[in-house]
Image (tube, rainbow, N blue to C red; front, side, top):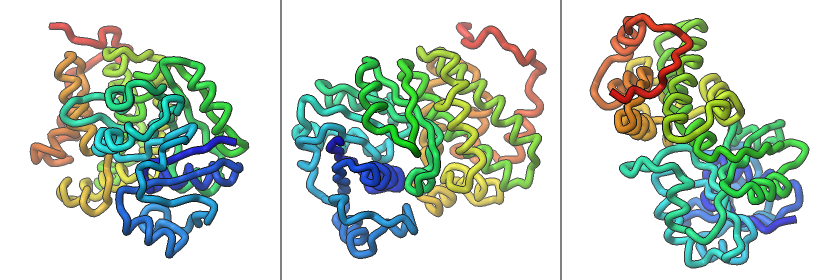
Length: 336
């Protein structure tokens, strides 16, 4: 059994804590917010982010960042916009042999960096593993069978996480394509927002199927341009994560999109739902695509809806009216 410290008391961090505790691991969970710790200790659950899931008294809840000291594995379950800040706080207390695992799915603004890149900068002497895939917190916590991917530049650390964290409800595959795994998990949030917009507009199954299929195409297009492998986007961290996020009401991205499709402003939709990683990721992906010369028409239209006041109806018209193309495009990066 291993000693874990999980940074972040959001839904996914707590779901991993519950799952790991159920299988005999030593688990501590840290939050920056004293009130959050007090509320969970009082209620026995996080009523806002993981309602109905009981947090065992065996799980240590703390505001002390020094709780990372001595942990064999430190898991970052932090919203992407706060990963660097928390990493800076934790770094002086992290033991040299500790393996760092990131579960966040997004890109940092304004650097446009993946979360593993952020962690490598702030905790440079520790191995980094990315854990990603179709894994709603609510289902992980309830022991519903889930499969994810552990990716690392050094496969022995992905192997280690696979061996320690896998159990009969949580199956981990390994992958050496860190770039592809991270980008698939991050960029699918954009398409999930758009899927929600389609639902809010009362569009049909045909529309959502087209959106998801063409969405994974442009995700892979950017991912390959940035160094990922095309086959990764056909796996759990690509199409797998895309399917679950576009179709489930557990998805905050989809729920925010539904509100936007019904006429709520993007800003109000995000305020209502809470953390919506796809909102910030849309801006970062749009900027990345322009930087490397990759065509991402869905992302571009989503960007204009979220940040330039374009109506969802006009965005749909723009997408349907694009110049005719062959489906099997062979030139992915426009170098002109």
